[in-house]
Image (cartoon, rainbow, N blue to C red; front, side):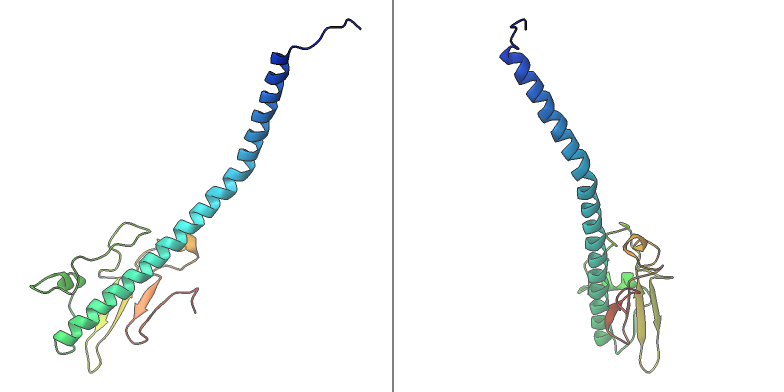
Length: 151
């Protein structure tokens, strides 16, 4: 044996490198799971926001019907017009950032003895959440938001 001793600085350097290596491994293992959970929460949040928008617009349409002898507006933008509009502005789908509820696919109505309407989030903006095209939707006949997952 030569009797040489390792200096304390060299020992501390090895310990520091080991700790950094272990921290890197932990980050590499945890980060993908954390980002997947964050993405999943955003999908759920966007879908819930869209459902709330459908309920908000449907209430404004029902308010419009009550004020206009049961008739429905020819387009949703009518809800934001006049001295006392039912809505201050038309909401946009949180997933798309666009107005997806307007005609021709988003808002459909049928005047008659009992006027009915259907509101849809037109497009495939919620497909990553497992929904089909033009979902979720609200039918005035049933009075609730529906989609292929909620049936």
